[in-house]
Length: 315
Image (tube, rainbow, N blue to C red):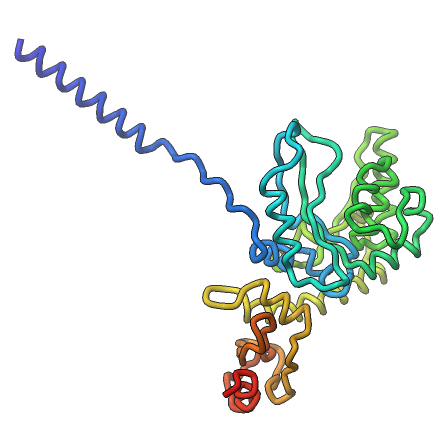
């Protein structure tokens, strides 16, 4: 009897231990992602190919630096509205339009939302130069960027591919190759082999600002020009990002104000002694909105900037 009782207790102990172990090993459901904020979207924007839209419109429109999919039965999603509010709060200036676009066609039972930013002067110039592409879509130079995206998204395949390629800043020969390849595949069912050219972003060297070219492609003047312009922007951005983004630093919204939008108080030449940078010197705050930063510098000698600091701080 004692043997039976001992065996039963042992079995109960083992079963309890197994259940506890199974419970301990069961992963907790992942926490939902935090709603987008002005700071998080500013950083995503700057670290992506949208940098090349923000810095003078090399890409007239960039989209996809923030994305969300939600059930197609829903009209919208709380995070979409949060993203729209956050983007509207960014200090982008009058030349830019930023927002969230909902793609027309659901995919796999989900709707797709994508954040975008447009440099309106370069977009307007493109539309006016390529009226053969945009006029049939009902798009003019004064059409808001969100409506431009809507018109392109609802166009037929070839018109859609061509217009998207142009507003995303790809060389026109590459856009025409992509359109022809898509039309060929639609007729023959055979994929047209291709190579890809990538321009770097802070987030990734590949797969962000990228376009298709014919297989075995040799670099053309258009490629070299685009690469040179992108390199100049990227090399200018990187030291400012290192100076302003990170633990204990002002952050991405301040970076937009200080690097993209000229500060209220200009930094005199003695405070900008050297390039390329290794470290950065922050010399003060002109107001609650405008950060004044010395160009990143090898030296941390702040003496030349002290008179300016005193004027800024009212000391």
